[in-house]
Image (cartoon, rainbow, N blue to C red; front, side, top):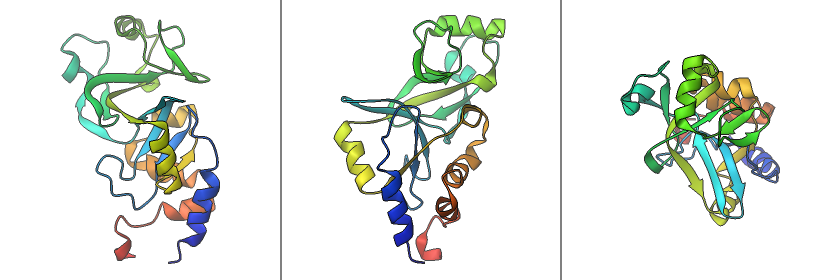
Length: 196
């Protein structure tokens, strides 16, 4: 199969800014151990660099496994990335949470964890409105620009419902299909191009 049309489309898409609230979608043949077929939600992108969380790498752990305390509900944990892999992070929809950092309309990053536990008890935050991660993904500005020039990533967008609801197994393919017809074809590429 001739990949030139796909490479051209990747270049077109990557002329878009990698802004917070966007997603980075790994190109089909990326072999990086952490980022193979990953979808990374960007929480910050500025002169100092970029921070995001891998949305589709669920761990065999739940929140109660790392909190060791009583919580209103348990929630799955995701591997957010290789940086600070022992630290807990979260994105959510709760605007009232103290110290929450706005990412885009209706989506926030971090906040007061003690208050979050109270909000969970009071039903102000539901499991479907929050995602917990161990670790995060980080790039300095030049590093991400370099990876975009090498066409390792496509830049896209997810609506809020999909961001919190879609199962991890479907997310990479869904994100590509959501970008258009050419990307939808990429979603069906095999892991190993020699099998095509």
